[in-house]
Image (cartoon, rainbow, N blue to C red; front, side, top):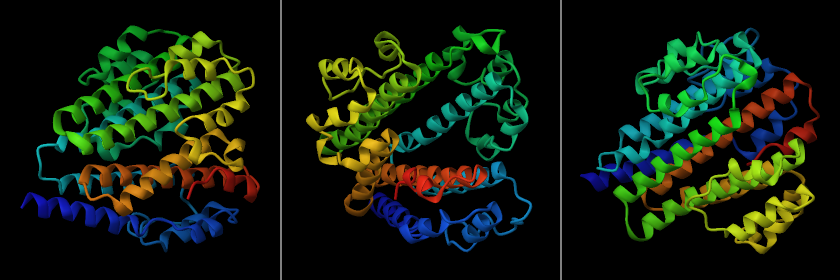
Length: 345
């Protein structure tokens, strides 16, 4: 019975993925110059026609559209989780932990910027029943104390409490982001250790190790290039556990004088097979393309539910990022060619 149920999860995940946007869809979307045109196109897509059915193209705000796209993805993932009938169910709920940390960080950015109205339409009220965070209180957050009140019944309270401050400009965002990342990965590896063994355990750990390493590489690049951060500042915000790249190589990357050399430096690492000239232009493209290619491989060829599920979640997140980048491109009338450099498909 369990095997049949798990096979159903794989079949369903592949079926939903089959309705994701294709290359030809993106080719059309990047040419669009208005939000109503984008919404009209998505309403005809199998993946979005239900969630956007009652939406009026001419009146929807970009924040509302992004929220609906995220809600659609969350409900698809939740549908898959509900189909799982095995003892490792808590592994699949890691996606909720990720969404909770994203919500907290988004709210903190809003406190710092004080752009409260712009954030309201983006808060995911739709997963309120699945979290110990008081999402409705999050809607009203304007200070750090308000945030602590909203998360007081969750594990995040103890993580964020030491960083309390009355001055939004004194919020240590990078430190908080780091602590939340550490918590997420600790939970991930704890759940993997508890429920899996052998080759499956190694493969799932490998997915998370890749995610950590690519995130670290992106941080090094951005902190060096845009903030001229010191080596010690960079080290303090990197995830240091569960890495395959040696500490010596991390130090060498951190100490490179020119941040643009970081991706080329990776030609001597296990990521060398992914490096090409296009990747040198855009560090997020480099990291995202690796994750995308690995996820595509797993969703097509893996036969174990956790690997297919993780692949589906990754591909779903990347489609959201693609659509969000297109929405922003339309908002700021970015050139079609430049928008395409931000899309991964």
